Image (cartoon, rainbow, N blue to C red; front, side):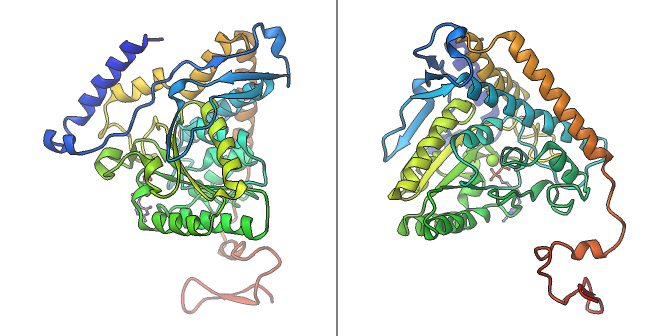
Length: 419
Ligand SMILES: Cc1ncc(C[n+]2csc(CCOP(=O)(O)OP(=O)(O)O)c2C)c(N)n1
Ligand SMILES: [Mg+2]
């Protein structure tokens, strides 16, 4: 690993290199730039040898001092309890999500997956850390970059890949594709930029109305953060004291536009103005978990909403049709991969802390490879849907609740559910 001053120098070199062609020097001075989180060393406090940390036995870790940047609120504690099993499962889940998306990448390049496909390779710590902090009764809604969340909310690898392949065994019966995946407490998968944010406020309203002790994470990107409806949702959530965590996944780009070219204020955690916020290192799964656990407690205790900014990074392009190299330098991508990668970062910490051994990591890696590959093969082996139009009319209504008939694709066409 590079010494921290060397890393800082490399980081500022690529920042300068990547900014220069984008905006004139005069406008650079007038803009605010997103803070880059350095991957600071997290500390393990109260356990020494690997023998002490078996299974579910509690151990305390301390995050790096730079993990959180609060706005109008006190930051969560840097220390929290976890266990070897939980830490190992965080690693296993991040590796599973990445392998699943790498498989999707390969199938797309083989032209077996068609249409839109947005991968979250690089951003895995957000979906995984969040899930570890909440229960299946808490709610999540996000944008089209949704495969990792669907998996963490209970979708199998097979059902995600089958969905991408358009198979009926897909999580949305092969009709949603990459952008529209759902589970019981996961509301997608939404293609209209920002539109899921007010829906998320509505889900939060439902939680409050039904007096359920659950929060809702309404996620959106740095590009979506400038949408008017996001601010309308903030306003209502604050007025009604809704248990909603507005979560901005700042991966530094909205399609090919860098955050500092699209946003007058790139401190997305401050964009709620009258809503307290927290910027966190979204490349550190431990920081994500601790921040999300804190955010859940805060929002369900009746204090109203929060705005959390997850500072993260996508290694690939915006979607499969974007190589992702025309608006940022290769040095930048390589820098993030080799210095800030969430999976590698957790692995290094757990080795340093003697919590997992190289052999245990190897075993997890090979188990994940075998399990994901088997599910991908099963998805590919699933039969393609029949080439009949009636399939289109299924699942518009919940099965069993269809009306007698529905208008078809043209004025002349009517589809009768009941003969
Ligand atoms: C209302 C609307 N406007 C434009 C688009 C086209 N579009 C799709 S993704 C995107 C960029 C969004 O960037 P960001 O919110 O940062 O999310 P990311 O892709 O980085 O996860 C745009 C403009 C859209 N889908 N919906
Ligand atoms: Mg973005």
